[in-house]
Image (cartoon, rainbow, N blue to C red):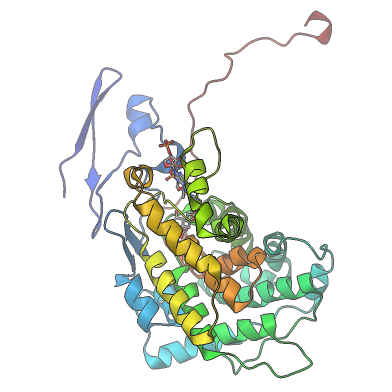
Length: 427
Ligand code: SDX
């Protein structure tokens, strides 16, 4: 146990306990700061704030380390499956063969959607962004699955968790089908979680759909890389929504809305659009110059991270997966060459090195997703599909935390002091 933190403020000497986790930075427990000093802390963006205890995911931004329940992301991406990682995040340990079969079987039997939800899609324009559809349909789930919205009931929490993980691929695939005017494809229980998603997305009633095992493995690995990531913006949104007692479907819909932003999960769509706009490697210097120009709001999408100040270990695995998929499918996309050269040039540029800007998980993911056949508008929907596992695991951890209470930050007030109302004739 570290020594207490001592603070001299408002003419008072106050001390706060310092707590240590299993690994990572200690925390200064300032819960009594306002009561003892009348001061708040000030930390916009929460760059120095731990919002909770968590045992799910550990990130060391300087070392490029990402652990899920202690297991390195590189090993999980190579050896595990998305269903196994989902079990690990939800339950804390890797499952036995029997436990994994039971869990996978449970998820498989929750993949169908209430038939009336199909009509819900028809209220959207065909060109609606899939993330707009995901926000709407996932939020609507609480109207159809009301029997798993009582958050005080552990059984209902578990059923809601399984339903959300199971139905996200169906919901995402239906958003894609609706956008291209093709009929919805029902889930098929003899396929894997990821194979089922591929068939619901790219299959048509007119013929059998064969799941390509290379694509299935690559997409399953991409889901693993996106499963959870500590207290990122969308996970914090899910936790904050859950802290009010909102039902799990509403909380996940809130997370989807937050993930959509281009500074967060929307970056994968923005990164591929940027690479396509750059087009050929000879135009890279023009965009590097724009990214460094303070007067230009342009940023290299897929670069930089709030926590990783070295490299994002997920980007490393993603780049390797691009090569595997391209070699296996015998496809190539010049955008990949542009991405590789952009990375090479940026990492040798003082601006990016000084600001510790490296490719993040979103830089290469779009190259693979595009090669598999997804339109860029579906990229963030796929991120949401995978991150639902992390959101649900983090939500369950928060609800079970005896110390959790409604999240309610304060502020530094900079507005007018009190003044009296003036009737319009006297203004
Ligand atoms: C995800 O939190 C998570 O874990 C998120 C995520 C997850 O799995 O949940 O990892 C997923 O969201 C990955 C990030 C995807 N976003 C992008 O790729 C968008 C482009 N990146 C940036 O907008 C930015 O890097 C952030 C938002 C990711 C991080 O921003 P920070 O930590 O708040 O850093 P900052 O905005 O304060 O930037 C620090 C400096 C600034 O310059 P100065 O004002 O100090 O002169 O670096 C510059 C920025 O202008 N900078 C960039 C840049 N990112 C930061 N300059 C050019 N290109 C960039 N991409």
